[in-house]
Image 1 (spheres, rainbow, N blue to C red):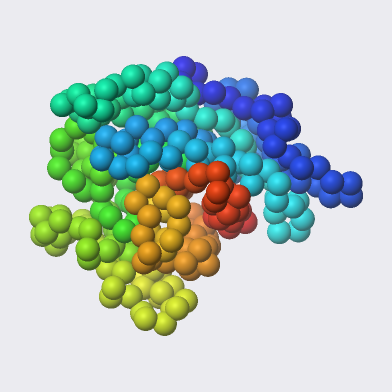
Image 2 (spheres, one colour; image 1 turned 90 degrees about the vertical axis):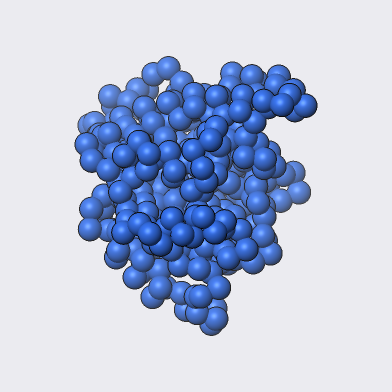
Length: 330
């Protein structure tokens, strides 16, 4: 398929630190040569990377989300195969081929008055690639786990899943922001706005929203809509670890039909992301939320986005993302 780079074992062999007497996750991962093979494969989950940060830059943000995919993969392939971890239920599909789009983005002069709009044109091309791939995965009955890139890719996820299911999708988003900004050029801050405009998104719930970074027009718009709901971070229980009830209540509001699960790493406190914040959830709290969602058969995809590792923190970011992936498929 155009725009999709399929992986095989040779793509990850050098990433695996093999040790006598042990089996690493990457040694037992499943692969396919084309999307048609998904229809008959016994594995339930499909892992896909999106190595881009064009949408973040188009939203006046800091680059770096393009590195999350390889960072997560390097850690995931080295977790242990044991009674708790079953790599045979996960297909490592590959990555959305963003090479040419990233190259085109690098050639756009930042002093160009149309810099962000031109990046937005490239985001639209990414939207098309992502939506086509997700549509085909979901149509086979598999659950895609999408890693990397900005939150602009939520639009492609939602559009693709909705088209596969032939009806609008519900979405639960753990996020410090709503990403419901105006329908201007495409960027990481308006993916859900475009999904609503395209009639691909039905109910939309945001968990852990920050008071300081949500425009008033968005608060008013969400409150006026019967299909939108949010829970402010500041209104959650002050006792660490006691947010599961609030989260489960929000989950129950959207899980009566197929839904997508979005996790923006901006929602984690002190986590290396495109909009890193000192306030937010802990890694362990988020792991608990993921475990709750993973039990729900109506969850049709899981998207981990906005992580922005660098050389100094890549190992820790990779471990966190691999925890999130393994919790979801466990």
